[in-house]
Image 1 (cartoon, one colour):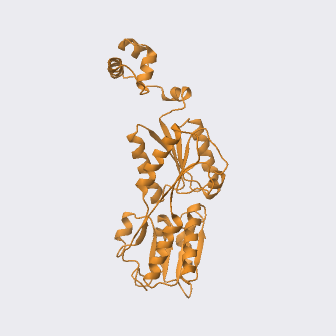
Image 2 (cartoon, rainbow, N blue to C red):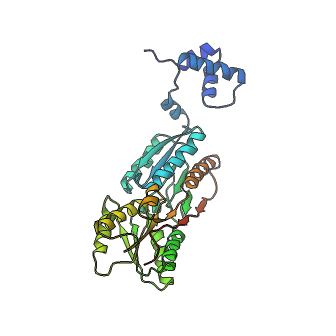
Image 3 (cartoon, one colour):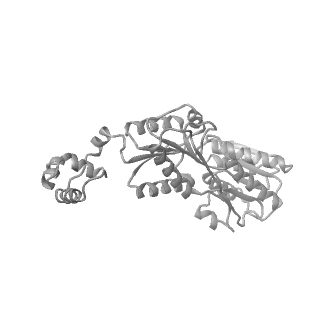
Length: 328
């Protein structure tokens, strides 16, 4: 089967190949010519060579999205919001998952260079976030969820310390005093949430019991199970992300304990399952739709105006109180 070329489309439409290229790129073209080109494209079944177009132009019509863990419901939801916002603007999305691995994230950043993306939305590891204080790229970059204080790049973030502090205050108001927190070791998000937890615990006159956990399947379940086996177990647990929260539920059930009768439970990410476990689990609901859409808008804005200081947009979460935290 012979591939239809741009010259054949141009000949059928009675225009130059350059006019066909401008029409397909969405650039200003006389309406009558545009109609003839579109009719010719349909008649010939012409499909543009996108790889060749990327070689000629920086504007590939594609954005990159590099997330830390696609299993994490937060990143799943943000990915959907980014894809929706990109689709509305006629953009495609290349999705990459790093598994909190700095080597993988560097590989995917190189891939974005090779693909000549219009820009990239990136949730870095803690190590990757620190590199963002000095790393520059040939495309606009917007950080989501995680960012270093002095990053060169725009960022859409959550007030992580404030959100975790709100969980601690809620538990304290309900009468819990021995509150243990589990936090991801690989991300700045985990560090910020731990800081909010520890500062608030101390301010309330309570002794922090925080643990950092490495990324990996079942790690949180094993760590929580070990804690629950100790002679003086905590009265309530806090999980700093949705994957960890689900592991906590498994560990609590494996230990033969009941929520909330024997232990309180709270965490991050308002996933559908958190509403139907027992009397429901108290969670911090993150504004995932806002994060995704703002990240796309900020990325395109930076592409139009590459100069200027990096911008940081800090969004607020809300605490959804359910039956897992009635008080000890």
